[in-house]
Image 1 (cartoon, rainbow, N blue to C red):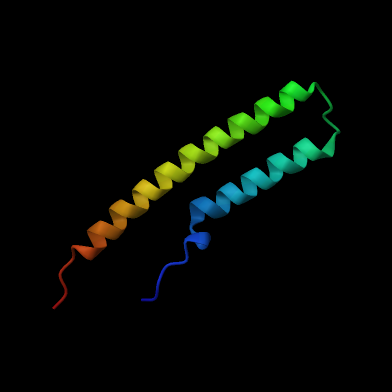
Image 2 (image 1 turned 120 degrees about the vertical axis):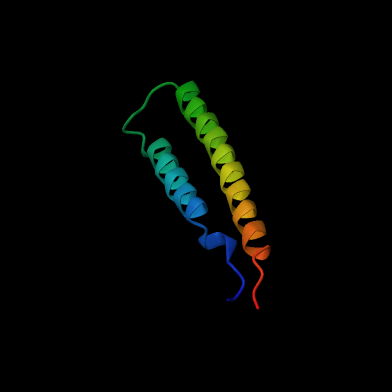
Length: 73
């Protein structure tokens, strides 16, 4: 089993898609509202991304440590 590419982690793939769609919505302008609303969306998205990355990293670390503790003969 080769090294795991962290960029292919499902959580990061999901976050890239989520952030991409949020950025596209912010750039689109069809939902023009106050600039503060766009900033609020960006902040909320950033907070959700940080939470998701933290949870994903924690789960990955737990799985890797459990996998490394399995004895093979």
